[in-house]
Length: 129
Image (cartoon, rainbow, N blue to C red; front, side, top):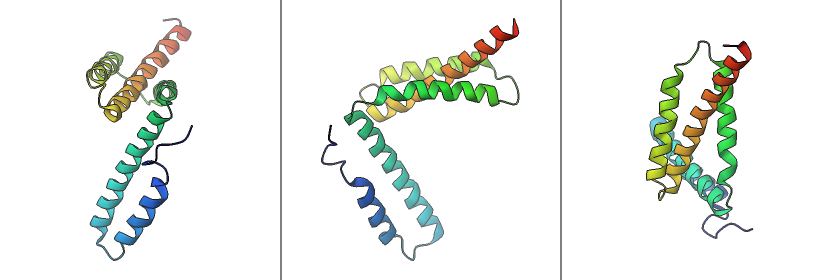
């Protein structure tokens, strides 16, 4: 499946124009321009995933990352707060489902929180609690 025309070649085109535009600029202006460029690239990446019908691949990865965050935590996290955050992100994503980029980011955050809760559940089950 090919990318839509507006997305094809956008990565290299944006990089070349950004480097030309920032020659001789103050450091703060360069930093702000780079952050804007990264946000634009993130938006393009989300649009590409949506155009190729692949957004369903990322929630399992975010869930696994949440479980890793739980395992790497120095102290036991407040799981009711993580569960509430995950539920909140899920509800807001459902309400904002027409805005694809924001919905995808919220679903990822919800999956991250769910993974952290699942990691804690597994750890407690193995500990016999």
